[in-house]
Image (cartoon, rainbow over all chains, first blue to last red):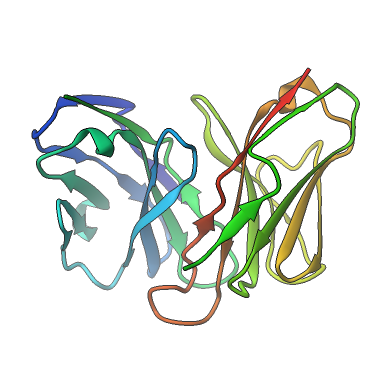
Length: 115
Length: 117
């Protein structure tokens, strides 16, 4: 069975602080995808990133960076110099690479960035 | 840009009514999904479809049905709405082919907040 755990239910930071959102996953698949989505107060889930299990390179996109460590089954997300607009619920998700299997989502982490 | 649209952002219905939630995507995606989202429970998959006229049950299909007559449209039907179906409903679509960064990435619509009184 597949499982995604986001242990942090809610995080609150002051603007300009760095913040890391944790994601730990379980899967028996040898090849899989990992995702992060952002859900702002408007409600729509916005796709942020997809990583393949065979590519452990970390990725940086502006103030966002992702750290994928297969050895610890983790795919953590760091926001540098957080801004109020980063306030949202963030979801980590997992999908086996083969077959029509659905995404497995974590329960999400609510991030509040205070000005 | 991928675009997934849902027929209503907010909907209020009465117990026992038949409710249709419509979802349309414009990217020729093969797969389409319906989720509901409730506080503390995260996103739960109701049904998904990987082709026209095909459907698969998700984690919580009870009380719901779906219809996919055309590739771009996936409808969620509440045959007889009940108060415990008050929720946020999210539709998504994904491709099984295309660029390496696109395959299997789900794109979501804006959601429908359904209230059943």
